Image 1 (cartoon, rainbow, N blue to C red):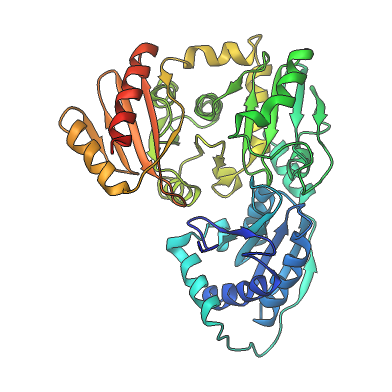
Image 2: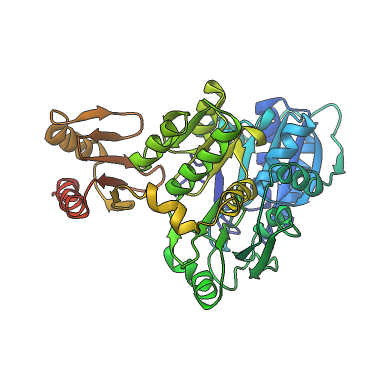
Length: 443
């Protein structure tokens, strides 16, 4: 059975691979590993987040840590609380965009620094498996803390919406309802909501913007009315998707390029990260606006670390995560929405018109292939392409040519290889895509 202790978080199916006994042990192991005195804990709207919270916090307190209970909040709010309260650590109880039967824990040290598989999750797993904890001399306490109003006030400091915008938002019955408090009631920002009641059974659709079929309701709403923009939060609201006024999904690298322009107006010459699956256009736009483009590998733990090291102000990831120095180098979906709204409202161009000059190339999108031996596939690709282009091995294998590039990387959780490819012409993209896929899928 696959471990629930993953590369970026702890995640399993409630009642099968994750239960209260395990949550209690994780609480004890977390304190034992970190030696933390104060732990922020937030949770999402899944029905089983409540019993998991009770078991987890019992373990945390038995091991001597004081717990600060945020209640129902978005994941970005737990990061904000961690940083502003000067806590030793934080845990968000959520399975993010996964379907209703899943739940889990997102773990951070102080200053909202994430704990990944390589920096602690595997150590915590070993402590859980051993189940040999030394009892604390004194149990910790539990207190509640209201973070939503403070987070909303902080995000709204960046609002500068000049003209009225009409906005459709799909909350997907998730914690975007909490994150969206930063957007509700803003001047010049009229919201028409979809699925705006908390329901962890996801009765309308899965809260995953990466699955195109889950955009159907938002698209229908936008195409049936007169809207400037559509927004769509994932389950714990650390990701946000954007749709233009015509009902077209705007890819996250295009949004990264837009937000970068606004950030660089405020902070010239700043460092901005984009993940290596992003269009060439992102790097170009950052340079054109006086910024310092920096490429990151995929995964929030890596990006946040690279941002801190470079003192970057912003980063965007193709999966819909947007990271801000202003939120302790972590995600803020509401802040990404505000920056895009600011930009639309400062002129008379629609979102599709703002994006048009950045659509300079043709992308394949991410294509998965199931393979028996990831290493052998990467070696085949190296043999075929390494001598022809510029090779980068920041994350998997990237090869860049004069008029096209590709990146191939392994999934952290499945026997899959993921291909992203871009070219200057559409027919060229299709031809190279098929050619590289043939190499990947060769028996």
